[in-house]
Image (cartoon, rainbow, N blue to C red; front, top):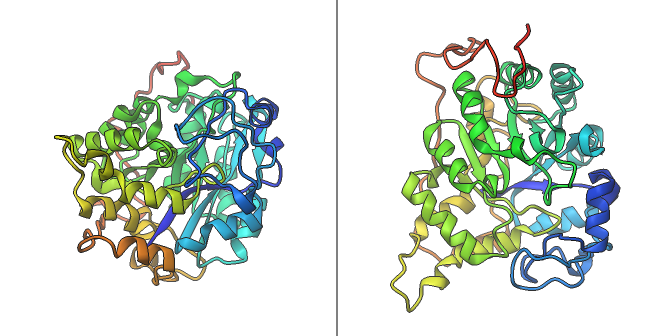
Length: 378
């Protein structure tokens, strides 16, 4: 099964906030992507883009991230995860209702994730509302929200996600607006969260860039921490280096496919992953085993992340894959067929000895002062 785990749906760039929308429209330090991975052509891609990866000067004024463009781009995968966004600090909002309406048109191939900002203090209520809308997860954006990952309001949100079986995505928009608090975007802050909620599934988008090593350390350390590789399709050397580091850390088995649509497409991401060893031809550089590359592309995401889709039984159906499409798309099949046997699926069972609904250990939770200097209140 091929699942794009990082896509966005927009009816206007203004939903990303005025600062980021201006940067995208004017090319003020925004990312450029290679033509093979850009959401170009009929999707209204960038002008001024080059094949040199991320560079200033790209203009996305005609960017189309609407339902039609998204559906067309996702034709080459079996399913996609559609992320919402809510960040008061940068005045960005992609409503959960907007995502849910699109997902309902094809619920077997789309998984909705609601953007939630913990700081207004209604995070648990937002999680409950997302569940009612049929969402499978929650997305937080610490830097764009100005919220330290271990803020007490954020910890309350994670607890509700755990209780409701929701996957947590750490998904700051890229590029970060000038008003965002980049120091809150460091993956290392999430070590305490993963210790406090050991059975909460956490997914870092864009490999947690620019702190890729920190992300890989967390993925290797914690059983239910994952990362997806969007943003690297247009920079083959950065992708190669990241994958080599993932092998060193022992984290390859929890890396997931992601495109970052509308700035790149799943077709471009798949091509970049499966062809990354082209960089090593004629050199003494080590290659990445083909089975590991295919493993990223073919990962059984719904099972790994415990997605519960409409009609599934909450307890077991998410892990059994009920309601999940099985047939690979034409592009996916042709891309995968070029290699040797597929990497085995990595299915992660619940923590040993845990009972359904049991509260996690608080051994990692500091009830005193947080690193932000805020006193934890209950």
